[in-house]
Image: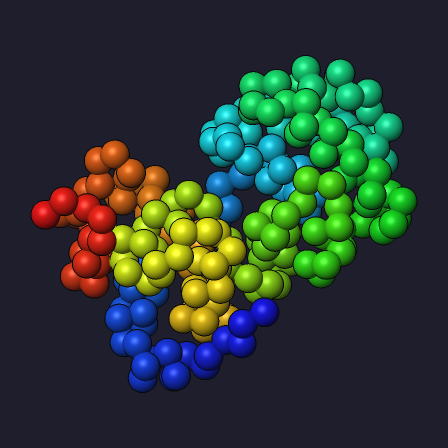
Length: 222
């Protein structure tokens, strides 16, 4: 894991980062996860479903999922065709159903049904990659294990010139090196909100964008 710099070091070495972080904080002072959940287990299941799917669609599916299988113990013994039927509309439903059951089984078998709080333990569960683990640790437990890089974060950090990398893993490492660790969680939440409200992929509202003074708009036409 990249070592985070202190906030003062960020200010001295890259004042533009400080201004971007401050502008996002002013624009989105309350940065919440868009996936509806009432427990860490629900958040983990919802995040698994969110792969290649909108949060809005996931939020339509999870109430029935959690009604039928409210705990890891219940989901661990669910029949795959039944889970597939519930999550069908999220896409890749066979793989997602298998991952959900496998994740729940792993929690029951290795963690007494409780959610572990380390990247290594989480990513050992079926369907849980680094991004999903970062979402859970940051949102559910307030543990800044890394920077979540979804499609919004990938696109906007490129526009801002914060990274030239193309893979989520490399982008995350670049952002972890630029940002103080205290910003790792909220920075992603705020960029995701920004990507949905202002920096929209097909029709960015640059004239309304609070980041416009700090954005070179890399990749966009003049």
